[in-house]
Length: 132
Image (cartoon, rainbow, N blue to C red):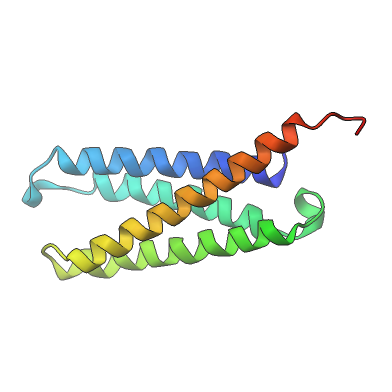
């Protein structure tokens, strides 16, 4: 499996885990959240980390390195760091924080955009004929 497909599948798993964490969190009252949403989101963050590391990996691990792949990996890693910091500090402060929510939304959109970029390049590479 090449680095783009691995990263794409990991980012899709991240998106599913994030959606599940939101649903689980929304189905419980604010005082009775428990650790389930945090655990599911942690699994999602692990998938995003796998995607970032796959894109940032040296060329001999997954094939020839590509500069665009490494840039995308850096973008995913930066967005992931911001998301983890938001989960750690904004939720610990308690209460709603519209600025933290907006920053979380921006980071999620960035990760979805990277997944879209990977999907478009992976599909385009799959359409290429072997002899050309």
